[in-house]
Length: 192
Image 1: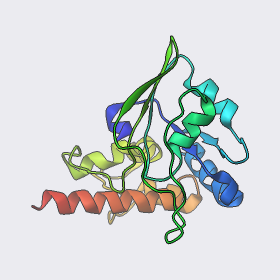
Image 2 (image 1 turned 180 degrees about the vertical axis):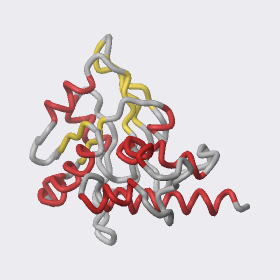
Image 3 (image 1 turned 30 degrees about the vertical axis):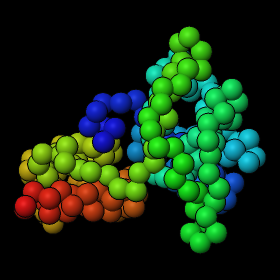
């Protein structure tokens, strides 16, 4: 959705202290795709200064699934914010949904943050046609013109440059599989 909106994206992998190896793995995947990635942890104060620098002079939106610690991160960035935070659920071992509304927060006269409620799913209605899905994956869009067919959806077509880049490790297989999931979801939405 952020690619559709043309936003400047920084991926923030919070709670990286829970599994540093997995956090590093995803950092590499998203950096290879062309994103700036920050690893953060409010418990160990990892990456907080880098996050602060990234927010200065911008209007930023904190968006992500419920319970990933968006409000906790913002409290670490500026303790004057004093945002409500939840605890970790004993049942699911995940953070609980706390933020209930969008709030514009001022860090300084040139830096603002929108703290948003978490989400559990993403509505894909903004994608009008299945051929548009490739446009929202930077690394897939980058190599799409190398395919044999201009209309290649990088799914079942022969001589697909994207599938070749996946085999070569240039495009991460997990990102490619996510692309296929979204492609099929858009196909199913458009059938109704």
